[in-house]
Amino acid sequence: MSKHSIQTYWEQVESGQLTNGKAALYRTIRNAGRMTTKEMASALNWKLSTITGRLSELMDEGLVHEIGSPGTYQCTTMEVMRAMHKTHRRQIRYQKWVALGKQNGWL
Image 1 (cartoon, rainbow, N blue to C red):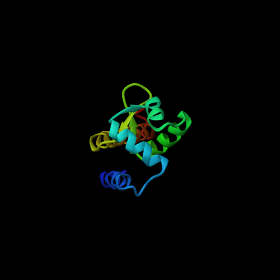
Image 2 (cartoon, rainbow, N blue to C red; image 1 turned 60 degrees about the horizontal axis):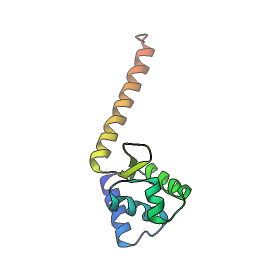
Image 3 (cartoon, one colour; image 1 turned 90 degrees about the horizontal axis):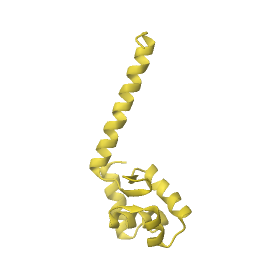
């Protein structure tokens, strides 16, 4: 998700255009800075299964990511997005290098 997509999503959440559970969870995490799933469940008065479902959707969209200890999350910043993109590009380059090496008998 691009910088503009995240900004637009946040603006829609803040303006009340998005009022679904996913938006409520995103707003809660963003306002807190970082949260565990138990803290999210407590803050929203939801079951953990509901939290994990909505959290999975937010993670798939690149809006939230896990940090530090397992089960702790924060909203994705542009710096994190750049680092994730850089890591992804490195993985792709490595996979291409391995394929080329196997093809040419180097590996």
